[in-house]
Length: 303
Image (cartoon, rainbow, N blue to C red; front, side, top):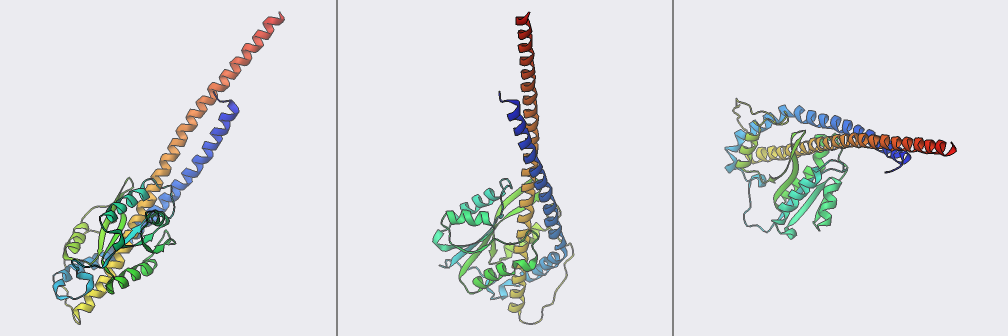
């Protein structure tokens, strides 16, 4: 059995660790609430956007916009956007989305894929596998705004409009609850009627108030001017909003995963402290018993 002094040092070390993990848990909880709040605050804008797109979806066949035209059998490349975190200590958050992304990438010829990484963890993982990373966004703030997404969305939209890529996928983590986050890979471009129907269907899901509810009443719209210009402008706004929403989803998932990981670590540290305290008491009792026995033996020998 270890000595009382060594056990005392271990108890002190574990207590210090528990203080750190508890502080990280509280910080992550605060950031998670902020990310959820930002997603909810965009509810009204997103609601009208989806409503407008629903009215437009019936006339998509009239447009020549590249955002709505899927090229079949093209030799163009595919663009893949991966969203992870910059830091660790967030449970299985990064490993789950990286594993799913690699699984999807294996289904496509690696020479036909360009990758944009958001977050250091995904960037390092993709580079280790030999992936072609054309851009990295490693400095996005935790409290991101829509303007922070402009450089990223500009690269995606400009490159897609030039015809360099036939499809754009985005890998993110869908926030369902504080205990449940789901890694997801979704086709961002081109936008199809089916995509819009799925988006509209998703609006009715209850996801801790992050996904907006579908409006029951639809507003009829009359469009004046060039239809292609209107649709392309709306498509760009939709893509930016989708990217922003997925960043918020991933951020909320990251912070909730980190909060739970730190909570579990704090609880484990508490259990370890109890175990070490019991061990310390046993060691101290054994030491006292031994000292009493030695004193008694010494007194007996003197007599």
